Amino acid sequence: MNGENAMRPQAAAMMALLNEPVLRTVAGCGDALGARLIEEGEFEIGFASGSSVSAHRLALPDMDQLTFPEMRDAVEVIIAAAPSVLWVADGDAGYGNAISLQKTIRTYARAGAAAVVIEDKVWPRPIGNGGTKQVVDRDVARLRCRTALQACREEGILLIASTRARPSRGFEEALARVQDFVEEGADILFLESPHTEDEMRRYVEACQGRPSQVIRTPTGKHFMPSDEELVEFGIRVVAYPLDLMACTIHAIRAALAGIKGGPKPPMATPAEIATAVRLTEYLALEERLS
Image (tube, rainbow, N blue to C red; front, side, top):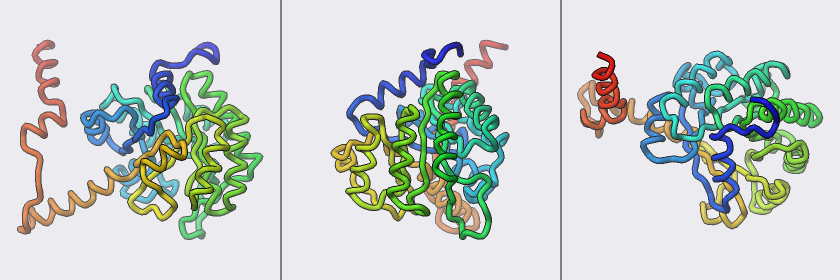
């Protein structure tokens, strides 16, 4: 893309949605079938979730075992499987140094992503902390945001600047990072794990009118009000990065128990399977090309 103002159509469409005073629900997935079903469910925005990709592809936790080539491939197939969805791609901490960070963003943009998430965690994750995410110092986090934003502007996509500082460094430090990211020009903000209503309100206020995001996960223990309350606070995005993956685990276990002689769980009909994998579209294309 040439010039900082040349925003890609999918990024412009996403920003138009998020500028409306409406709470947008974002479904996350880690594979092409999940993406296809998100599209079938008529979600406007989807999330190529690193934690879901790590689970689907490696059967490992989201603790920096997933490499950039593996994540890149997942993002590409997810977007290709559901092109009508506006996709947010999980950029983690950029998968390396500042040059690697920009490469990650450019790769996702050219795959068709509308936005990329970049967070302020230490990468790779130090071992011996019981899985707790550690974050880089504030000045490094601000520089990472600036570096990411440069690539996003050049590629014409949106930056979601994320801070994970609340659990390890406290709310005031996390809030200061949100303010830094706003000053740098990030398009969308995410402060992980606000603990109280007051913290969430202050987080939204610090965004200065820019869209703010929260997440809901099956294992989440942080403050999470109802959708109605989120709207009242001014939150614009609520994302579900793990629900499809969590349901998949339950469904596969139930199916395996049925195969071994237990009760059969609900299953898709042949027609439903054909719809999910777009059999009719494939056969029509085959006919045209034969």
